[in-house]
Image (cartoon, rainbow, N blue to C red; front, top):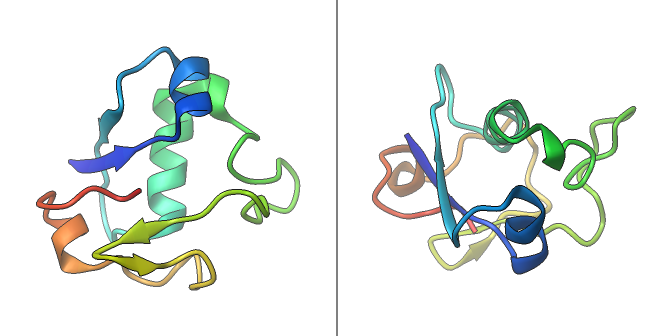
Length: 90
């Protein structure tokens, strides 16, 4: 399970607390995490990435291990601490 901390406006839309957990099978990447979030919380589809291009929306940022991962490839593996569930993806 991957831990994800959502910003307040997305928490409100999804009606969840500050942190959610989503299951990931295979490689733990930004794309896999977004796919899992959108599957578990369909009301968030299109809020973090464009419906058509699947590109990250400009106002959405990703952080883990005190690093900004926003400009990293969506298929790049996330840090081990996130993949192992020790740290959340922000």
